[in-house]
Image (cartoon, rainbow, N blue to C red; front, side, top):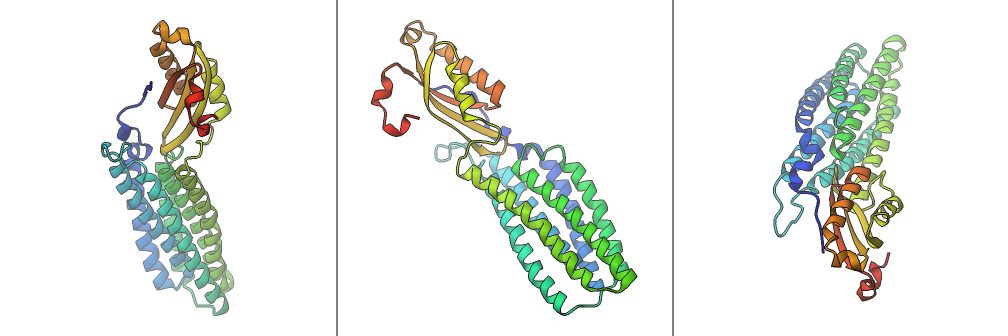
Length: 308
């Protein structure tokens, strides 16, 4: 016997609820990307070009996230019972890989520039970097409201934060070059940008891998979930308990719940299901729960891998 407490999966996707934020930040990011490309080419600054490459990666990631959020909102089918909601997670994975790729390219060029310094127009470099700082601050304010709900928005927020810190590094390098003439500061700033990119990329990829491996969502203690289920009146025991995430903001749960025999006879099984669904929704924010109610003794008929 099963019971489902969630409907309209597409409407629950976190990225879909904040799509306008992504669109606005993508427009801002593309504008800064173009400014930094032009500024980097005219000034000869690798740090600006590195930050422009990061901006391009951010824009691509945002575009992927937007496309994925549209796909995730499509209705489920008999072949894909959760629709295309996990496309959001795959988009976040692509975003993380792009971050790593751009970091490697920048690092290689920075090493070359360190060994063979190139003249840089520090004034133009400084102006463009200041424009980047202002745009990134706006982007952070736009994304702040949704970063805790969606992997894609979290990824975008972290990328914009990294861009902000990268722009600060470029400003410092421009001031150093302007005041001392030490052009290697540009290559050093580029390496600092790489150091900002890689930890964020690793964090994003790690979280995506957890979702794809169907690990328990962060903040959900499986032992506490088990205790709550077993404390429900009429429940004798619970096994084959699983909690995982379909996509950002949509944790799901399934469990085999052993119920006392007189509960079936009295017709209270439906009430038990409602109590379980309400309990888990309120205490653990798990809206999609599926329970298999079983009479005592039924566990002996199940495969061994169900007994946990």
